[in-house]
Length: 400
Image (cartoon, one colour):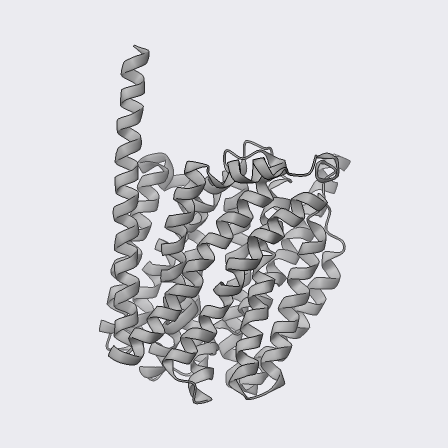
């Protein structure tokens, strides 16, 4: 191994470590959040508002962070900010019992999540400009690893030391991560590029593939934040699950979710293509989401999440790669900021509407909504895929 290769691996390892800590901080309390709010007497509608505030903040913050990052020509300060604000979110959760603290904490968590714009673009700069799909697959795997560790620890910590201990643990991990983030390497290309112009901003936001990926991602994140990152843990508690069993439910979902990106890029996409993989992922996710409320036992619920985790892990990384595939490097933070701001609509609207429906019709109503959204996404993807095939055939016939 050459000195250059060793240096690259060291930089990659540091950034990977920081990325994992970032997601551990953001997700260490997610499995216990809806049961925690119910234990505090917060109803389904207000719980939906708290859960949705995470996405609502990102709708307004993610694009400005992307534009700001492109204008300043730096990414690392936003990596530090992401971890620092994640730590503050955990501190606010632990600060008091009033639901206002819970709402504020989740909103600050949305600020932290908004910094993911800079994370993805900086990570992509470690790869060749034509290899963004592989870069997004790798960072998606790191994302799931961090989420898996955080969510896996959540139930165990809560079961042994109580709800609040989970938040204090997140505070400690976020603080350590913020300190380590100062060691993250940022390539020189970020310093030398020209700032983004307003006309370029408009052109980026009109890219057809970016708009398509963003719309489907709204639906995908709606399903995700209705289910595992929303009300599925509460359904498990209704079936008698203990805090420790919530960790098992997380593993059932997140391990297949983590494996899906690699399996999809290596084995599924070469056989059925990107659109075929996206459509299949949405269809499987819809079926599993519809089945959540029909499972009479915790074991049955966990079985649905094994398939659901893999299915959602199929389409989300592919949409992420599609969003910036045809965008030049100096504009990628803006494109990613737009993409992530748009799909944050689903992170807000999904749990918010599901909370309202659940108050009126029970938890099952929210899961039926998630299933319907998944089926709608599969149908839209099928339509767009058919249109692309027809356009390709027409272009081929003209060239002949």
